[in-house]
Every structure is written in C-alpha cells, then in structure tokens.
Length: 324
Image (cartoon, rainbow, N blue to C red; front, side, top):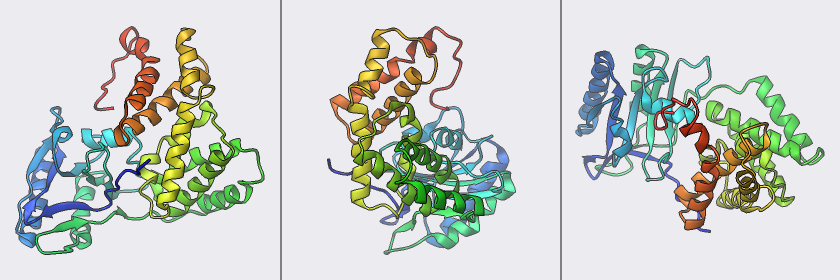
C-alpha cells in the first residue's frame, strides 16, 4: 500500500496568486473582521484573498483551494463540521485557537481555523497568523503545521501517559485499545506529541497480537486522521497503523463479517456490539475509501452504513448530515 500524501503546509499564495479563501461567520461584524484580515494580508504580500460568508449554502465544500475559517462552534458551520469529525476540539479554557486542519476532504486542501469564544478572541489570532506565515520562495506564502497556543501539559495528562506507557506490555492487550481511545479523546484538543507516541505503541501491540475486537474499533480510530500528521510518527508507523485498521475491517469474525451477521439477523441497534461494530467499520472504511479508494473499501462502507439506514429513514432522525 502506498501511503497517502500529507499536506502539512497550508498555502495562501502560490506563484503570486491567491490559493485560499477566507470564510467568516455570517454576520456583519465577522465580515468586517474577515475583510480586515484580507487587507492586512494584501498590505504585506500584495495579494487579495476572497472573503465569503459561512452560511447555509456551504460553498466551502466545493472550494478548490485552502480555507481560513473565522468563528466558533456556535456561528460557523465549517468549524462545527470539523468538530463533529474529531478534527478540532479546543479545550474549555482556551479563549482562542489558531490551528491547521489537514486534508479533511481528501482533496489536498487544508483549513486554517482562527477560532475564539467571541469576535475579539478570533481577531486576537490575526497578529499571530501574520507572525507565523512563511515565504519559502518568491510569490509563495504558507502556514506550517500549527496549533497555537499550545496548551501546557497538565500533571494529570503527564501521569496518565507515564502510567499507560509503563503498563502497556504488562496488562491484557485490551488495555492498549482503551489507552488508544483515550489518546483519541485528547490529541485534537491538546496536541501533545507524547500522546501520538503512546498511540503508536498501543496500535503496535494491537497489530502484533492481531487483536481485532470490534467493540473498541470506533474509539481506536476516531482521531486517526489528526494523529496521522504528528511529527512523532514515521512513515513506517503510519503504514503499520493503516494496515491494522484495514485488517480489522477485513476480519470475518470481528470486522465486516460481524456487521454482515448483524444485518442478516436483522438486529436492531441494541447494546454495544452490533452498533459499535458497524460504527467502527463504517468510520474506518470511510477513511480507506477517501484516501485509498477501491471497490472493496466502498463496499465495506456501504454495508456498514446500511446498518443505520432504518433509523435514519423510519425513525425520528432530524439531523443535518453535512453540518453534523
């Protein structure tokens, strides 16, 4: 398997032309802030970035270039979309967050989130963005992989990492699955690379022992698209982890085979096993079909997602697929 390409840098200007768009929460104040940011960028680099509202039309989905997103969970559909897919999860005590989101649509384009609890906090990201931008060659402006401000590592997180690392080879292998899920819950929020190292070690033990248990798959893989970009991981690490996930889904007992058995038995979503197995297989198959497209990966995704179809079409579901 040839590894997917990583897009660690986010270009705003390429060959002297804009290759990014600024999307702002749909209000006059945020529009004025976005236009102010565009003005500052033009004054510094001589290039105008388009400014567009993040409204119900969701035109950001059909853009061809990178995006700068201004807002927060309450007023930006794009930022909400990223949050519900585990790309973006600022801690509760974070007033502002400047963060690059890498290739969320598998189209080679990134999102720079300029987030904050209010407009003032969002605008506080502007000077930091200008400070971090690089010009590697004439006519090029880009932002390297960024999470700013970097939250300090708490003593609690440090102690958990030390404990899980010490016990990783001593306890039953299922604890490696628990610990990988804990990393997924925290990496997008905190960004500490020690978490990515622990995640790699957990997945290596799971892979070495071929521990393909569907009950934990969703938690193990939920933040893999974010962790995969960590500088703590080598290409060999990424290949090992990607192959592990593919092998779990391919497994006839725990992966797609378990989901097919649930569908044949017409099981309703009850308890942990049928629904969590289908959810885990669906999420991994979605990742595989996006970045490693094949007819088999598409088939796995269709089968797993069909498990939930009766509840979308016959139940009281009123959600927003694209927004959520």
